[in-house]
Image (cartoon, rainbow, N blue to C red; front, side, top):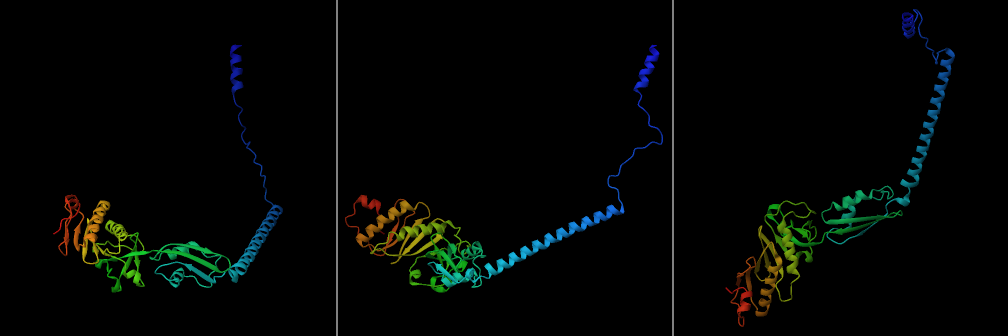
Amino acid sequence: MSAAKNGSKKSAKRSPRKRKGVGSHVIDYEPESPVIREHEAVERRRRGFRTAMWLIAAMLVGGVGWVTWHEALEKNSQFLLKTVEVNTSGTLTRQQIVAATGLTEATNLLTMNLREVRAKIERLPQVKSAVIQRDYHGKLVLDVVQRIPVAWIECPKQKLLGPLSGKGCLMDAEGALVPCNVITKEYLAMPRILFPALSETAPGKPAADLQVHAALRLMNQLQGRVQDDQPALEVIEIPNPWSLVAHFAGDTKVTFGVDDLDPQLARFDRVMHEARARKWRLATLNLIASTNTPATFHETPDVTGLNLADTASTPPAR
């Protein structure tokens, strides 16, 4: 009985075998027939027709829009450039600024790129910044800030010569080169900076040399101290990296150090005060030395009444 039972269990676990010749059937849900193929062809033609109609409609709308834009806006005389107002002061004239923009009377203010026009103006080395405003009645306003020259820069190595040489170049307070096209009396009265070792610099860009900026600071300080009876500043010479020589009218030369100008200027003020009071004809003064400041005179100086305290703060006569 146990054997029979065991045999029945084994037979129950056997998987039924497939009969030979019996395969699986696959149902074709998309059978092809002449009728079906005809229906598919008709549907493709319909989709193609609808797509073509949409394309034609889009082209018509785009064409109408382009014609409307071209006729109503681009060719509309209301938006064409009629007048250019330039607000500026400096060496550049209105005509030169307008010519730099490249604008013509056929320019449409509606489609004009203001950023490109401003970039063209600011590429001029005489221009520091520019602001452009437009209206839609044919008017363009250019507010141009030009660099204000404060001195001449001379460097034979860079072919920057004197003001009257035809190759003179001005410099603004930031140390940027400003080409000079027109020489005026005001420009001729400006002091000159002599710097034989000036490194190469591009017009309109501040100079990289620290001595140039030190010379400009010194020039600003000295010009602020000008009095009626004091010789005018004519030249600041940069002979080496550590000194500046200020040349005044009347053949007076004062040497400053590049750094720590404030204490040097204080001693300069003291000496010049005595020079004006005592009618000294100062020839040279070296302020780099902090004690025993060397000085020379064109004539024997009057030191009457100077006590030891005054003498200690006043350069000795030579």
